[in-house]
Structures are given as C-alpha cells and as structure tokens.
Amino acid sequence: MLTRATARINARNEIDEQTPTLAPSENPSPTSTMSRSTESTHSESLEMVEIREELEQLKRLLLEKKKCDTRAQDEEEASIARAKKVTLATLNENQWSFLMPEKANLSSAVNWTLWFDTINSSLDEINLEIRDVKHLEHSAQVRVRRLLRATVSQELQMKILVSKS
Image 1: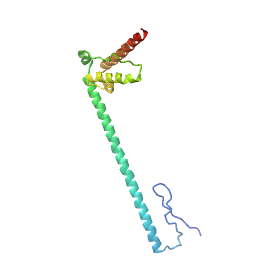
Image 2: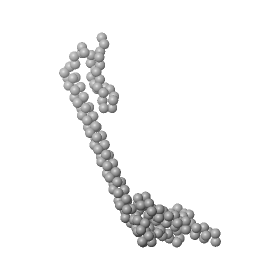
Image 3: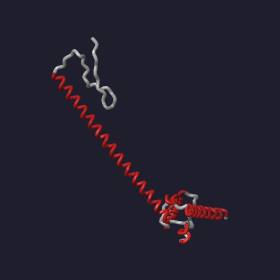
Image 4: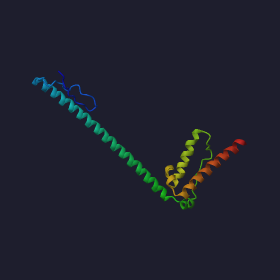
C-alpha cells in the first residue's frame, strides 16, 4: 500500500526529520503523539529564540549604521560651515600663507609628517582642516592650492640649489 508522507520545512529550508510521517491507516499511540508534539513545540520555540536573536542583532547593526551616517553627515556640515567663513578677502586681509620650516625637505618619509603638520597648522590659523578646502568658494580654493603649490615648489627649488652647490 502507498503511504503519503507529510513533512515540515524548517527555517533553514530543510525538511525537518522530526516531523512524523505516518501512513493514513496507522493509529499512533497517545504517548508517542504527545512526545512528538512536545519535541515539535520545543524545536519551534528554539527557532523563535534564534529568529529573535537575529532580529535583535540586525536592529543593533542598523542603529550603529544610523549613528555612523549621522556622525559623518554632522562632520560634513561642520566642514561646509567652516569653509563658508573663509573667503578670498579673509585670506588677503590676514596675508595668510603656508609657512614651512627651514629644514624641511620632501626627500624623506620622516620629514613628510613635519610637512603635513605644518600644512595642518597653517590651515588651523584660518580655522580650516584639509577636508574643508574642497568646500571653499572657488576663488579661495584656487588661492589655497596655489599657495601650497608655490610653497612646495619654492622648497624643492631651494633643495635643488643646495644640492648643486
């Protein structure tokens, strides 16, 4: 005689092997039915606990991502606000420029940190950070870049002259 098996698919899309598969003509005993029912209920509750834990973890990750996005957006807005305060007139009024130490040269990696710190401190004098330069109005941005390029070029030219002599 053919039997028709019923199977339950669990949360991992696998056929649950604890699911009873009985032929229609079989009569299970009340004790075996209760134990199977208890096992089924227990496995379902374990699945629910796992699902809740996964949902809580996803919720925490989502909140962390939102915090990071908010922090990045706040930093970007602060950068734009600082850049709006600096204009070409401000740069000209203060006769601002990049000041490089006399002994600085770009030939060694050790000295690059000195250059970087000096560039940062020069920008700090006008309340800017390196990332703020991209938000400056065009004329001020061009001026800052030109001053940096001229300073670096002048320092490199002096190094070439010193090495020739």
